[in-house]
Image (cartoon, rainbow, N blue to C red; front, side, top):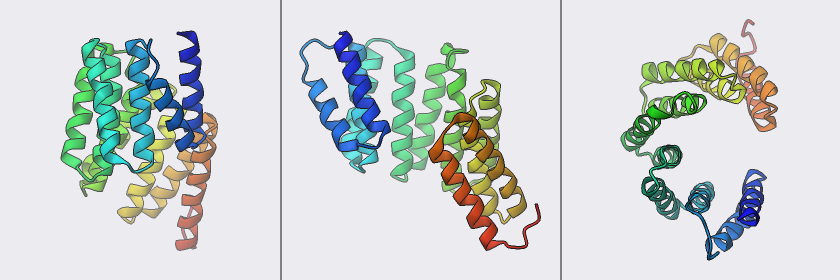
Length: 222
């Protein structure tokens, strides 16, 4: 079992390094192993779904994520159920199924309500995703509310990455609403928190947002 755990961790690192095809090949091989615990089956199925989602293979991604959810339900593991529902919500969002995405994220909240406070740190990501769905659907008032809640939850748990993500989203929302000075403030906050999180991708993407904003608004006052 320890060897399986190490292989899962190595395959996940391939995903983190954006070597999606290599990661998927390894997870497929792991899925063929005879002696797998339910926990390992869940990890393999969910990771396969996430990788396929990144490869834009949405139908197969949904199949794998739903398989992971079924494992979590079978074992009555609420944390696994919440994780699977979160990814299914992201997938629904990417497919433009905003009502379904909101339903899935709210179901995630219901599942994890008994896991507090151990699940508390993850609430920021749930509220961030709900805010993103609202923004994509054009509901900017609710989007702002969810993003602000996401920041509060992230700050409460010293989740630097969560703060950076939500602050960046508020910056993009502010640009949509032609609130450019506010947008710059949010992007700078995002940049500082991504630095604290040592998230290089987040740092670079936020710097890009700041540069684009300043180039489009050269007279923007700080």
